[in-house]
Amino acid sequence: MKALYIDCCIRGKESRSARLAEVFLENLSPEYELTRRRLMDEALYPLTADSLRQRDALLAQGKSRHPRFRFAHEIAEADLVILAAPFWDLSFPALLKVYIENVSVEGITFRSTEQGLRGLCRGKHLVFLTTRGGIYEPGSDWEQAVPYLKAIQRFFGFGDFRYVAADGLDIQGYDGEAALQKAMDEARALAKEL
Image (cartoon, rainbow, N blue to C red; front, side):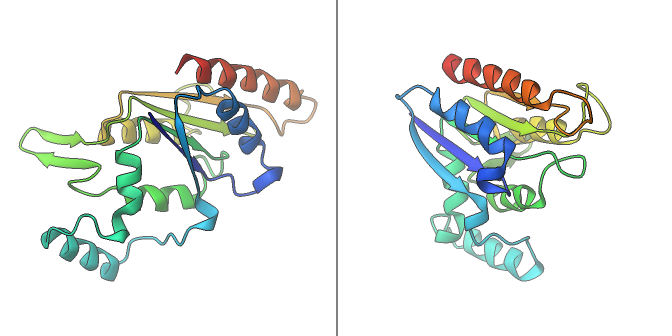
């Protein structure tokens, strides 16, 4: 089985989200062959008129195996996809959105049909690991990462969406380290379940 770890923990080793992700990865079954994709090391750019024309021309010519689509194939072929990113500006870093733009490719990760969109990714699980400075209740208008990624799960066709969030890490007088440890316990248990 293939597991793909998409690392958008901008602060690297100083990142609390990276700490949370490492606990998850350390407890993942050895049956998974793990690929790590560190977004900060990749040449990822937002889509532009020129890059969209190039993409559309390649697809029209049947060249879906062009290197431009390597990340789309990588996510489509994974059995488990793990995203790790901090909570920034009500969501996550823009780099993760740029990555999602680049892997959203008709015929690779999704297909448009007469019945609507159909996801083509074979993964059974999409997991999101995050740390947040404040406390955000499920369904809060102030937290947009989880609803967005739930929609991506359906769009790409993953079997389910799970997430672990460590909340309150930057609140004065709140035990942020205890909150992070609690989230790490949840991540550890989730990894063992999958």
